[in-house]
Image (cartoon, rainbow, N blue to C red; front, side, top):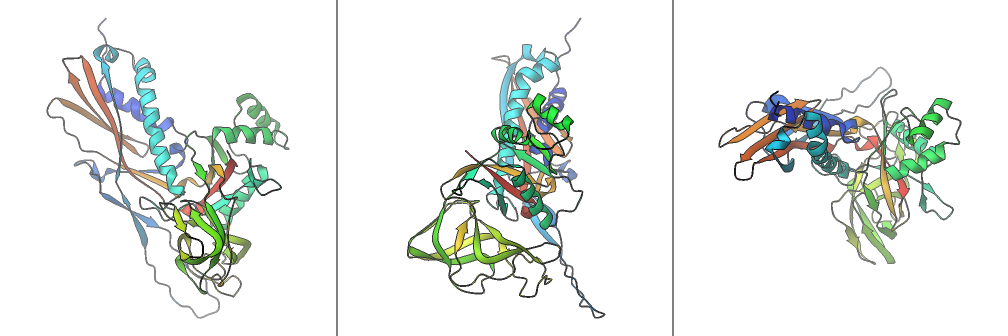
Length: 423
């Protein structure tokens, strides 16, 4: 019987299938495919326009003040081209698809998907690639000295409450993406809770947290980022009535500022507001340092800290309606800034989030089958992938590359909570 040699079409389809199933995080974000590039192919630098949600205020009484609807949008730039290159012999091409997939494709695609996932996950620390801002919420469990320790059920529930207060609709699917070590600790901690026997049994047999536990679908992912916390001591607000995306501060003689991207802090007297009602949540608003490099301000000096979310006060009236309001009031002069966790700590930045918070849009790369290069392109489930292959007659090797061209961003930072687990 003649051999049924693998074709580039068969290999591309299998690679795309493996890609969509090899990384838990990528399976649980909003993926979009732009077919407008199907004929000509996209180039690095092309942009996709993504609409952002509108926000309106509610009035009372018979008189109304019409509100203009100004569509907000952000430009998602197609700047990320990820590839994995490999070579294999003609004898490898004679394998069955299953054998070829296990031996050659799976390891390569796993590394490709892992790199894409890690890049998208890094947007929780800094507003990069068109994102609206870094993740603005942080929860952790602490010991008696205030040091971060492993999360508990209460930590998870606190994260769920934060998502609800920030406008996540009831019934919306919520995801908990955790590091394998965090999952091991959580399974141990959850085993003593009053859980349905079937779920306890599943956790005992598999060592995994099941779906729909404490309001979240649980997944483990080895690409969860580790975060190193900076320092923020002796720092106070310099100037009253500040608003906007930066906070001017003064550093005391013995103080210091060395903030890393993604560090979270609070400001005394500045409380968060409920997304729907505008009323105070009763807890201090958390702000994230919104920079891409470490920010240092010397002792006895002053400076500006880029922050997310922006300071948008709702005013002194309880439950006041202000579009895109974030805080009850601007900070007072001299208000103290405090890190959300202990300075110098390192932790696993597990994520509690809504899949629509993250967006990854892929576009078709150009096709060119000239000069002995064979190409094939497939799109499936919101992802486009291209394979290019050229035969080297001197070595009997097929030189092959897989490429994914995409743009990615964190578009709804308020729908992401970092759940810390000490390293």
